[in-house]
Image (cartoon, rainbow, N blue to C red; front, side):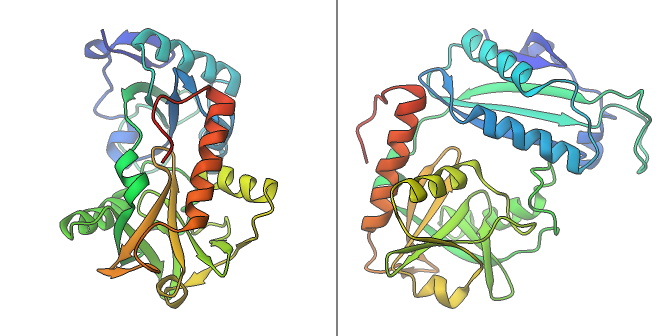
Length: 289
């Protein structure tokens, strides 16, 4: 049986309904999170849920639950659906009200939904690497908010798909920002470089874990904007994300990155990231990449 959460209540998916005038459906007026599940346990749950609270606050949505309450509900959902390896998706919209641009009154409660899905680790891509294209970043100027407004991301990712690639690396003019659904880092002369956490990127939780590991293991890194020229001249390029962990990029715009194979720094960070998963969630069934 497939269970979901709808406004705090555990329901069979077939019984969960959202009104056609929900503001998430009409305007994309809401925020969301995706959290990885390993061994039936949430990975970096507190960090994801705290970011959800922050995103909601930035758009003026007051969540009716505390972080601990949300985590308890999600853990119950994972248990009922017997998910060992996968994700949990949750979102809050501003609620159901007659369609108009101005926010509804405080009497309109946010709509909350959550569901689980079994998702394998992308072992082949983690081992061999991904291919990418570059694409102009046409999104709005508050990419730090994990909102439901993802059309710009979708259009970029579709171009990558049509080009036979896995990801679109976005740039504003000459400045590289992030991927359509990942954060991007480059390695040059042993230094990891990734865009600073400002309004032009989402401060990814996997990105944060990666930087924490760099600090703990004395890996030099810089949080700063870098250019398309630096991207093209990088020794290594890798992506971080909730479902992909750390994945090498071996080709951009049909040109090899470095020598065209995953680099040693990327491999080191993959291994350290996996150790972090094991520390929090227990041993993984798959072999190391």
